[in-house]
Image 1 (cartoon, rainbow, N blue to C red):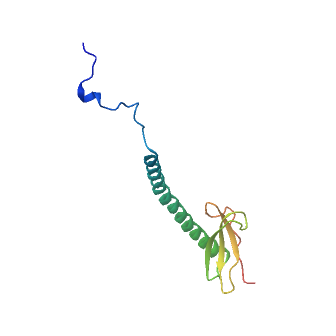
Image 2: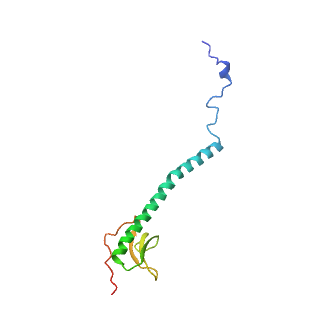
Image 3: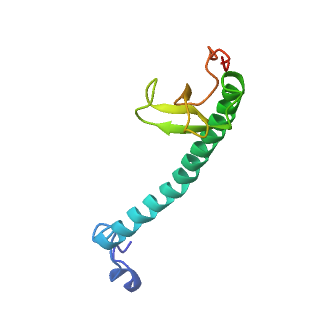
Length: 121
């Protein structure tokens, strides 16, 4: 049995002699991975923020109808340094600005202790 390689395989480069990837290809693959991860994360984060805003607006409208029925409307705003800590805050809307009605929390929802109805007395 002859251990010599056929002429076609004599000039072939072995796997050990080749570098797996060059620096340019590594950067390109890394960039593609970062873009793919961003394409997965950004829509989820955006959808979460939009849903939280909708929930805060709805909860604020309910709280406003109970505690400030005379107000022109309500608005919910996300504040890092608001009353009750960081999170969504509910305000009434009026001709002279608005009053703070209730903190809604980081994940907005109705508070467990709804504010008492206010009277105009």
